[in-house]
Image (cartoon, rainbow, N blue to C red):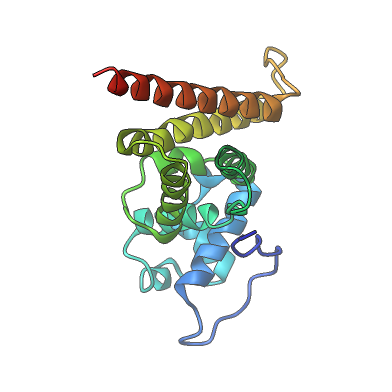
Length: 211
């Protein structure tokens, strides 16, 4: 089972000597801040404070705020586990997105950002797309289905995570409706989509064989 580096342990900011700071250090600081106070509250000033630097020093390593936010969002995706290849394709696909949900719930606001990120083709986003398409291609789905299905699963994933985090944020409001089975409901949704995919592929195959 492949998993990228586990979330780093929280640590006290260190003092940097000239040339020591790297882009990875900035991203890891952003991950710590996101876990503590959410992605929406992230700023270059807070990153600088976390790293004991001035804001201007950070711009030496990243293009702008949008760039660093995209890098942090992609680093979150890097924590998603790649399911073992010895599982059936449907269990692999479900496991990939189930773990994606668990990871994104640890980083409030990242799911929304990933929908509007500006930097395309970042490594972990590409990695997850390639894994999902490999699973579908190996399972024998058509090119059209292989192109569309990852998007459908992503819509479910980001929608579920956004809804769950909004409920948590509003937990003190007595009008907030609470559920204790969010994980189970998400898994049911994945299985229903998978069943629909299988039926759609069968219908397309039957239609083609009649011509």
